[in-house]
Length: 200
Image (cartoon, rainbow, N blue to C red):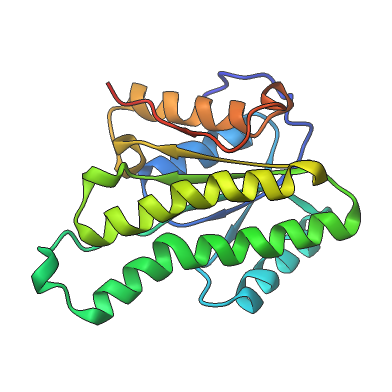
């Protein structure tokens, strides 16, 4: 088991949403660093996100204090050929679900007076088609805005935008996991509202 960081995550409960090699590498690294991992579905509403967070907290017998969300791959079809249903599905998975989870996560932590960290995993805007570009551009601005809104509540939010999120060599995936673990740890207590990558 990879252990590039010590157990300085202090046994938090992390809810992990999405799919892909990058997300699995991050989940593995967080578990190695001491986090309890719970899985959640892509949410179509705030109610679905709230239910998933509540279920994860109940199962772990501790509040969820880390949120990791990777969007599903969007269609890379040429813009003029995109079916409106594919557009809506891509925006829903790449932006809507992330906002629903983030809003419910923050509301829950603020009510409990607890700090927390949100990390979005995303591809660079230019890595896919129009749907990916639209969702990623909006996510970048959302990351910065939510960071400002929730900083006073001790809730940090960052995004990793990298092609490695979709998959890569073992060393690249390990680097992605290590960066993610750092960004949600107390060592990154003053890092929020950032969009960072690990691509060459």
